[in-house]
Image (cartoon, rainbow, N blue to C red; front, side, top):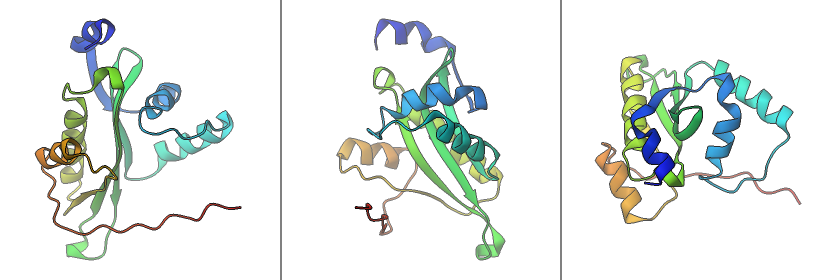
Length: 158
């Protein structure tokens, strides 16, 4: 772990993200993928929407004011399974300097606990990774790779 990361290891706090965390979350998400930077007014509006969306929480680990890992949990109301909700976990990311120290696992555990508290009957997570270490990580978090996932993406406008 880099020296700065080691210094902050004892001061890591896990909590839901708040409005003041937008800029540090955007910096963290650069470690997830290389999306183009968006206009600040657009991301501010979208983040406000996320923060007020019922059943949606971004759990993050912070070293001081810096977001170093995060997981998004979405709880979805349902009319089957005794009207029990189900949950999705998305955008699992850890800053490159803080990987392999249990942060993502702790955040997933927190998200799973929140879903069970809301009486969800299942939690789903998809990954595009084929890396055996990533797949082992999710299995070690309690996820079973026993269903077939499908997705469709919106075509890119030309």
